[in-house]
Image (cartoon, rainbow, N blue to C red; front, side, top):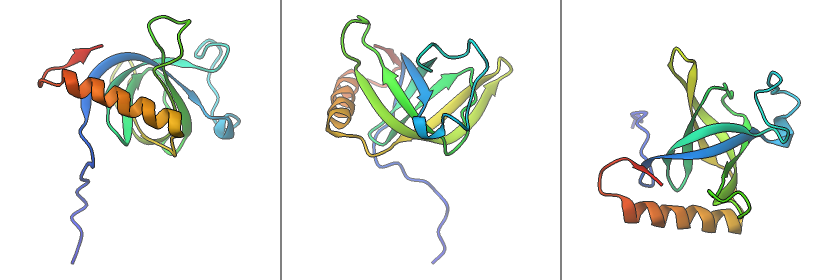
Length: 139
């Protein structure tokens, strides 16, 4: 029997808008470099988290990250002195230019999250599912 090619999601997607940061993981840092001033001193790029699910997320950013790239994602607390809401390793799965700015919608899958990241993902999903009434939210 031929497969249709239809991708079925295994978990609910939540459309949200949260400030986030991404950076190239150490194993790809030599292959993927940005112009001066694009990242901060630690290599983080500011972006907006716009989609979140159990298996991955999507961000909008002005920087192109190539498919297959290993990245780290950070969701900081509003109080910078507090630990982040989430810090997790990811792999870029989809890249789409959104408009002429340019801006890119970068979709990625979480890669082998450790226990702390798994707890953080589940806690954020619990929070989002409590808010989910069919409208877009800014947390």
